[in-house]
Length: 154
View 1 (tube, rainbow, N blue to C red):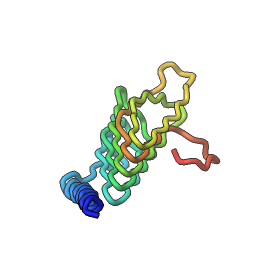
View 2 (view 1 turned 180 degrees about the vertical axis):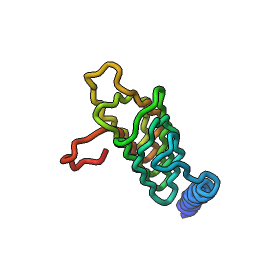
View 3 (view 1 turned 90 degrees about the vertical axis):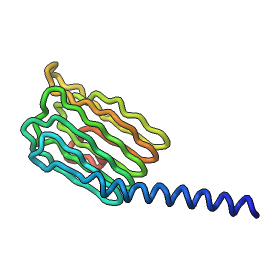
């Protein structure tokens, strides 16, 4: 019985620590960027962030979902050369929609989570390229384009 009590206290302390750290990070790292921003720093902790970008030269930025979700639609944005996104998900999810004409280069990894990158190979060798790197830890990251009639996310 003593072992179960000790184990329960350790688990309760770990969960409390993670939740407390998330609350502190939420105050320290506010989201920045709007639909016209060329660079974004989106943070969703215990909530959700949605963005439909119309940037004239989208360069990238960072996205963090911690017990929350980030949904970004880049189909109306124009991609700048060398665009790079750093994406991290911890017990949350990130969905990034891109136009079919973009090339996606990904170095996303998952640990007890999931990553889906739908690469479309544009016919144009000079197609704009978005580089995405990051980690999904007990969460998910989806990047890609979809047809209007497709019901799947991202």
